Length: 347
Picture 1: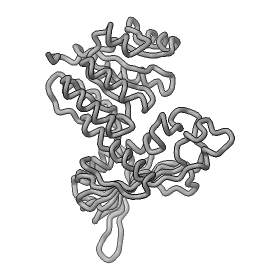
Picture 2: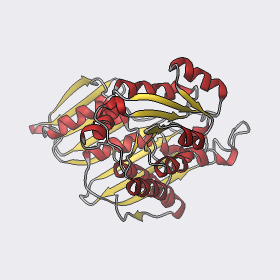
Picture 3: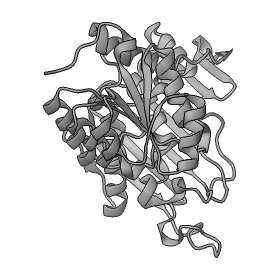
Picture 4: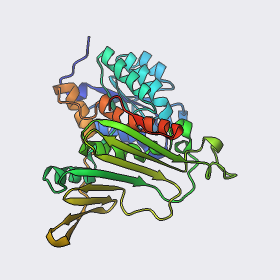
């Protein structure tokens, strides 16, 4: 029987992964706690990090494996904060045990993995979601507001880019087999922004990749498994609109901004410090408006999870929503290998 909750405090929560990088385990538990839910469990393979968790949350249950936690803890909702290639296996374990599951971004590496988790969650009647807290970043909130107000007119294309010429780090995010590839970090966020603005079905994906330079360096930690030096995805929509995504570690002269929205009335460029909107006027004149980025509202992610489980508020980041950028990146990788565009069945 599906468990019901009257108050957020009745929802017990835990995390898988309490590593020191970015202190993400602590951050997730604090955000869930701020949304009214109750932290009760931490899974971590490093005993030293488990000790840190007990200092951060006195009395919290600590476990060395997901199996042990699921067998011994009554935790209701578990967030997975581990390398990308482990998300699917852990997520399937958690939802099969009848627990709600949130996966750190990206949801998984392949479309098949996403579909398996979505189906398993449906079968057991639990929530599977992905921590797309950047859905509420100030810059995309403002872009959505301007779009709804008609400032852009009809969106023709969105250009997304991140990166400069530079050696990849030695961490696991630089490994293709662990991370999924160079597009799977910021690329997932950038695609998720774009899918808020372009809502038509995706019909085709073309992928491009260049590799070998950084992997060929004598000090390359991951050798041949190093991420591509640069990768691109071009996404075609049924509406005729398109999205171009580039993540690079080769480009020494990158364009300004990481998101450029080209509309029939205006072009909107977003960078870390703010946004600039250039609007065409009669006689070939233009007006330019520069604005700071509004405050991010990422706390709404767990607030929405708590509201969904207690009052039935619609879930914003559903498994199906989180699947969309992964399907695009999965097809982009396949397309780059095949040397041709690939059709999309549904996305």
